[in-house]
Image (spheres, rainbow, N blue to C red):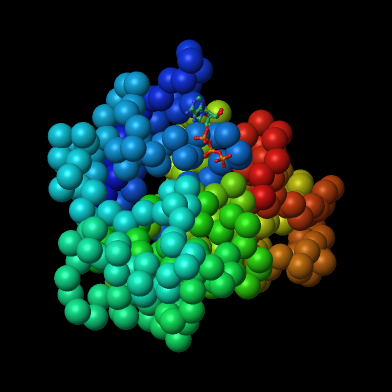
Length: 306
Ligand code: ATP
């Protein structure tokens, strides 16, 4: 899978303070990459640098394998974005607004506007003045504008800020559809873990300007899987019994009598009985409480997220 965004040592200094600090970011083709961080973590600053809106103090940016800023014009033609909501003309309709943007972007395809409005579910509302749109509708119109020119990469800075739960759900559905049906790579920033978790397949966690971790959700969930932990008098024998009597293979022996079982959660009674019946002494049984959210809180050093 090729890399769509790659930064190396990306840094932005404001008055001696590093808003973004030595960022090595990797977004691959086809990913929905959730860029998660608390307010002030450096998400918008990073995104602004990726879009050539501000200059990095240090570091390199490659998008589609090309260097920014040398190839900025070519690169930006292939990107759609919503960064800091730039307004629409409230006294014009959605279609009239998009028409202005289509002209600015050199989009001449006849049904490009209808198509974009249809994707975001506003095709029946295109005659309404944008001033009468809800915030969620305006945000969807923003996405329509961002995809007018068929970008390969969509960059969305906090697209659900201020939306109600239904608006958030619509944006989520839309993002997934754009990734699946149109094969657009998507970078979406947010400060809400649960939101990122529901839409993204990869995540980059930024904290105080530093990228703490870049990982797939699959890997993240694997690491944070629930398990039962037993402390037993003979862990090797316990493991053998789990396989023989319950066909359990998803376990880890951690030494000194500790054994973790990643399946049969909720059946600790049965497993305990098996061990005891077979002459193994069980001194402790515990179910892990390690959830994704706790992991993030640990990662960012006790602050809150989500
Ligand atoms: P939020 O979710 O609140 O938008 P963020 O993660 O996008 O947060 P940034 O807006 O990138 O964070 O800000 C990162 C840091 O850089 C903050 O401390 C902010 O005050 C500072 N900063 C951002 N822009 C400027 C600027 N133009 N001049 C000085 N400092 C700035």
